[in-house]
Length: 279
Image 1: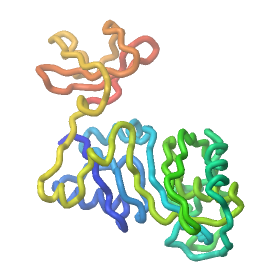
Image 2: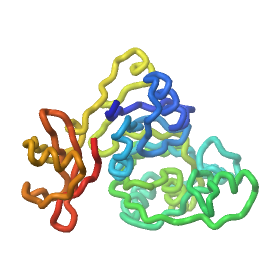
Image 3: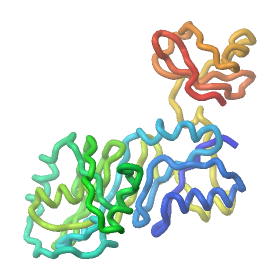
């Protein structure tokens, strides 16, 4: 079984929980997801089946859109509403100031990875350091913030939309925004509304999937690469993973088919076409 399924992750489940449920529903083990969502978060979780799991890094690299809600006035150890409260502060900011900070926020910067995350340092996950009260230097990663849009503001809540690069932690983004606003605030709700071209309209709940109301996508339906039907000569080469000259004038990647069956994805490297994924 090869395919892609866009799941609408429910609240209070980990991304791994969702994959485990899919394993059970489909009686199929080789399933992976393409970008962790916190248990608190909902929305798009793109899952890959079978040989398509080799496309995880490709799909994970897509830009992502979120709608986030900030609870103002508190600071927690997890940077979200589920954590232990470390401090409180009276909020006194204006809508104009929030918009100013949003508009002037860097488009690219080095973001500190949150302590409560699964990123590994010296073979151990950061949240394990946190739970053991061990000190660790938090890594920083370059991320891109393509768009920040204020949707709603009252004295205790900020709601905004963000379009960001892969690897961006919205909890950390909120913490950085609060620092620029000289106040406290933590993530209260989060919805991933887009990943690449996938939207919530393309997604299915676990209940939908259990009721057989879903569509498993083929690579030709979600990868925008040229599709070339092979003749017998090139089929024999491609099926064996042979590197071939770029006679098809491919600019990046290509999907090869034979008798309407997907055979392989090849990519351009050093003026030749080389196997990227054998199907």
